[in-house]
Length: 371
Image (cartoon, rainbow, N blue to C red):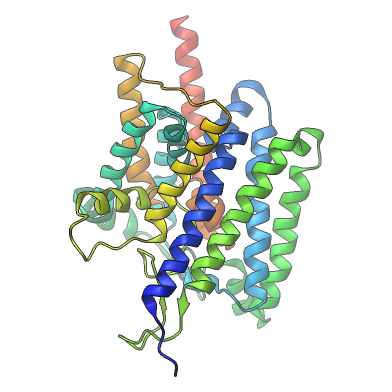
């Protein structure tokens, strides 16, 4: 067997991930792609335009991912989302925390990167607090609490928790065929719903929805196809290079922010290597900054009050703890995870939206009482 140059493969994967995340940042800055904003628009104004953009991104990513599964390029089982053990309580609790946190912090992890690229200094504080609390929930004090509480509650499934695997285990049908059929039905249905009304066919919605969705598909391909080595010359085991989880990865913005801080703080430690998660945080930040500068929308912005500072810091902490507990954020679970058709991702997605809705309504009532 021809020996594989892992360093060269890793370099290609990292450049691909950086380029795709740079595009993500530019598109998100241009179109105001924001999950919290999408939910807030519905609760406060009854506008579904940005929600259609988000759903369009999900449908596009779902179609692309499951087409690649049908072609034999990828396997959902190689991701962190499709394990047979469904930690549903972690998804619910973590999702509710993350949803509440992103409202208090004026956006999720990806939005904080986009806002920081546009000159928002509050977003840098959010990212710092999010990264520290996320790392603590990966390996520190809150990790001990997480592992010994919510992570103990789980359902053992007969196959991977992605729908094609579960249906295949029950019917004996081919997983690739089921992935194609279910991907077309569910993903195609989401795309159709998104563009069914005129508000879903505006230039911003189409660019944000299709653009973000295709970026996620591209990162899945870069990690699961370009970065897949069937036999590591050092261990003789299969490996997905340049990932923190050692599994196939797409974009997510909670744990990667923590790993990026870790890489920056311990840069001289040669064991700290760049990964898809780390370069994607830089890519989104720089892509957003590039568009903000080109469009002349770059503006410095800071906290307006002590209350504003406290709200953002509490929200960031909730996102850091909640995002790790739920195995992802609005992008990590809400787009990347859901694209695999994993049950846990749908649960986390629903919990994030529920947490955001409850917190938004609490904020509205609070403002009304103060007025």
